[in-house]
Length: 113
Image 1 (cartoon, rainbow, N blue to C red):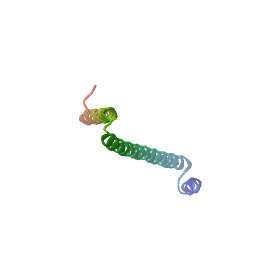
Image 2 (image 1 turned 180 degrees about the vertical axis):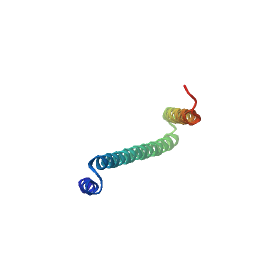
Image 3 (image 1 turned 45 degrees about the vertical axis):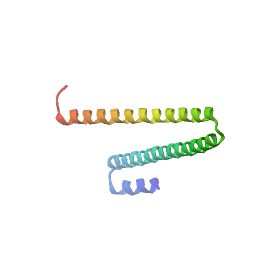
Image 4 (image 1 turned 135 degrees about the vertical axis):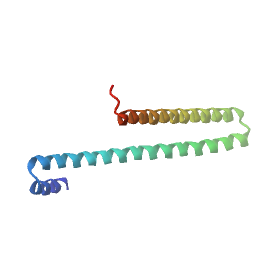
């Protein structure tokens, strides 16, 4: 498909412009593919977290039914660890967003360094 696109562009534009448009199109396709890969990984991670949560719920119900206090404590420790990891990821995301906004504000203010 890209070959057909390149040949069409070559007929409409001169070689230099056609090469620029082709490179831009290729970069756009790569960016789209990277974005889809990120979304796929994010979805996969969310499914994994949900699956782990369901497994912990089942284990907790079994342990409670059987009166296995050690298993209950182990599950609670796992939950605490998972919550701590999510909290860390959230704080990191907030810092990145804040830093990005500061940089954009600095760039838009056109203050010389």
